[in-house]
Length: 108
Image (cartoon, rainbow, N blue to C red; front, side):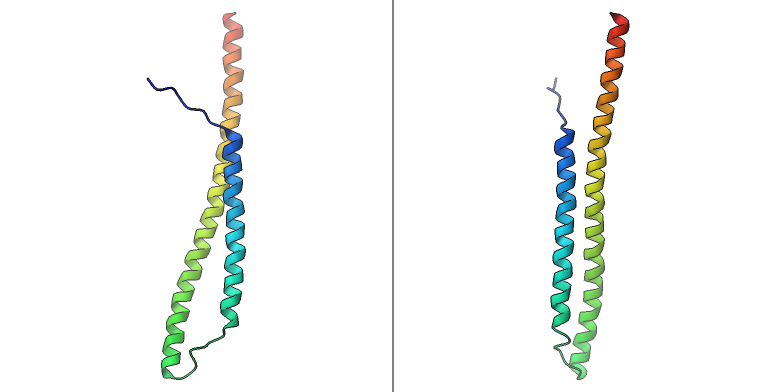
């Protein structure tokens, strides 16, 4: 038979906050990187080959931006979910303590 497990809602809540904090930092870094890229302008030029490179770059860039932003949104949501899990677990434990004490009082 197993020895069970122990859940620490405060540690879980802290982890949720860490995920959210990491997400905010990544979002800030991503915005800074986009600003840096914009500062380069269009170094491939406007001739035929440059236009082809620019079109490919733009298509890849748009897909990358969408994917990165979606991932950041998902990460932020996961941080919120982890925090909610901690809150829900703490509430369930409080409820369980009340119920066990009620049974103890009834049984004497």
